[in-house]
Image (cartoon, rainbow, N blue to C red; front, side, top):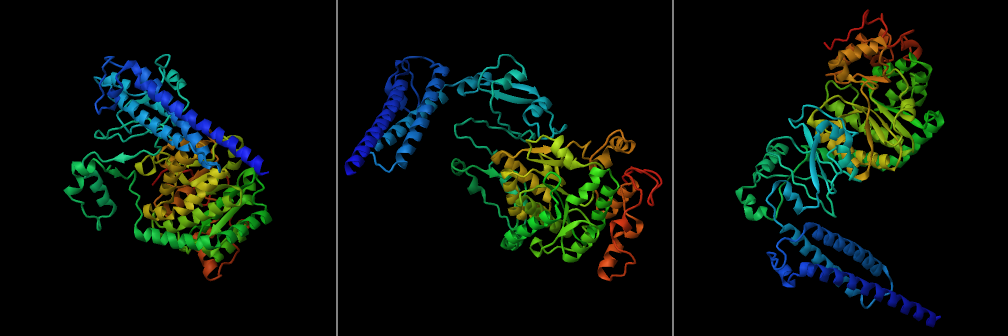
Length: 603
């Protein structure tokens, strides 16, 4: 037995020694081969400034060939060394592998220096200093749509009419199609259009996939940004912090967005998240049992998720009545709806209206009243319930279709996501309509979105749960969500689709595109849903819905009646679908108790 072990050990040592010798041969051959390039003096490569005693101008393509050979040799050596390090049998010559790697790294640095020293007169010829073979300008809109198809293209954000595409192989002709044919991957950067913003582009075997913004003004931009982040606390670092000597060793990195949470934000987020985390497993188990018991996932394993408090109960009821007024496939939506509530009494009223509900104190201490304005206290606190509700449903393994209470259904969107939408897209979001820096580059609306359950979306929702500090800092679930979406697209391959506003319209269409709204009324366009966002508060929201014949509740079931029924039990009727849904109501159809004609005016 011992003899067999010694034989195996000896064979392993011989193999490892051979591998180490091979590494030394590869490193030595490459090193010597480049040292002897054009029969140049080997000492020339050792100088800080390269001297070329034999050939006046080394040919760049030969340097690139040598650099590629060197890179492949280095990769191979690293792989082999990793295998040696994991081996339980120690090789006495393993040090030679490390030496080979050091030698090849040194060679790589020398080849880099040789390449960078190949000076050019600038302009197009400066590409000789890089691997880039061509750079061409193409129509900006077309290039955007062919490289960033999932991101909305916004006109009027720059005076540039073109975008640049760099390629490392010469295209066969000057067309965009030919340029793209040379690429298996296109890395995209969208830089600021301000005239004093410059762009540095590098290629590397070790790429950085997050764009870094750097201050080129000697600290002025950075100091201004930090002052805006903390007006009371910030103190200028002083001129001594920005001397050339110090900046030679320190990059001035400036933030991509003004979203730095303050101490009170992350402390509140920590408390809120910890409360949920302490009971999350039990909460998710109860939600899973509720979904199973009520068969809420019978429609393509998808649960319609809503979040409400007492202040928006009438809007939830209006959604239910809009489904009741729709075709049979829309009526079935109510059987898939789970409403997360801010308190147990609200849950009882939701159940009385025929919808499944869920409440747990771990979901947050939420205010009773509706938000009076975008971004106020009630608005921001409801954001936590919007996060935990979707997170919990996704954690049970179901797909989730989240929507705000001010959405009405006209057709079945679940059917759309499984028969019309691209099944390779992880999540779809309603187009918000806003085209501001706050919501760039996706401009998604967080009041209506579909999450296809998989590992990428599960992790995304987990990170969204952990980002409540950012939600509090920016006072917007939507803003924080877009930031996180972009990060997960870049880092984890999350795919995001933005829905066609003709099929999934919202308040921006109502306010600014009256012709499209009229096409809905006339029936020439048939949207799936309508989202009455883009309003200053609930007063305007209800007025617009009533004026368009999209308010499906009886006048007696107004907000005050819901509150009176809750607080005093003095209602003369039960708030259920039979008593509160307008009999015979149809979308965009008048007369109604609220209007005799369709009114599309914003004010």
